[in-house]
Image 1 (tube, helix red, strand yellow):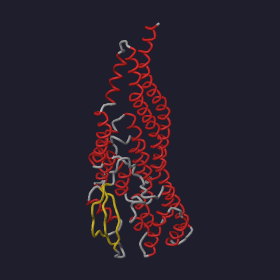
Image 2 (cartoon, one colour):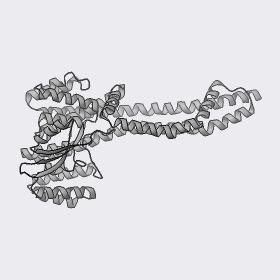
Image 3 (cartoon, helix red, strand yellow):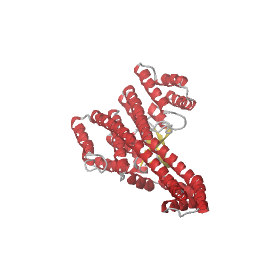
Length: 407
């Protein structure tokens, strides 16, 4: 999914600019026209997918999730109370304490005062407002339910931030313990083992196999070759990997590898289903078309494999196939998703049913993270203890033998 900068004319023949995410230029043009605009110029921008971006609602600069949630809820309250849009924006601008957000709101308020719709004004600030946010606001304006849509958006932002926090929480402990383990191992092998090895060799006696192996590893870790590999080869490898992962194909292959790892696959799948259900239901409830909803949601999942699968389902929907049938043979989404979609299509309540699916899988993510944390903690302690025990055995083994020989 790439971004496209565009210049277009609106219904009032005014020229506006914005950014849209799409798979190609043709899709970008269709998305722009679906917003009631007449494209004048479309230029390809930077790739929308970045390593580690979970996609949902992107917040650029210094605008935090909390600021966006508060703004969204307050704007919904003021619109529901009958306060004019421009006045609401100016009031919220004076109240916000975030300087970056205050500047953006001032620019948006001026656009609205000049007669441009809120959705189009927000589209000029893609670094703050995602395509999901912009599409839902535009649909709310057209349907006359902007206050209701804004309340849904606030909930969506909160849920998205909550999922991101859970992902970080799940990764934080093993990363910290792994770093501590590597530092401890490097310190022992670089400073402790060489000195103890020299003492043992000076005393005399034959060294056990384990001790000789650890001394050889220690000698290699202090050699110029190892230092060059760590301080030169390491950064170069990381730089090359980052460049490769910035490409669509590189990121796709990386995400495909992640989906083949047993535990990681379960976690990614649960998070993806929860995010898909929540975002898609919000877009549908706001009156966004099915095709635009699928394409917008696919870029918000944060996984290239799942994104391509959803875009493939979008093509089938474009040809008249129901979404539930398109996802029936999915390699990622379980059958329950297509079954619930089928029920929603029959009853005309896709948004309400998918909210239930989202709530179920959000609970599953909570349970999975808690279970994973309870397993990882003793496992990492066991690994750290094993490394320290291995080093200790290689040192105290020959010392014990020498002590017995002296006696």
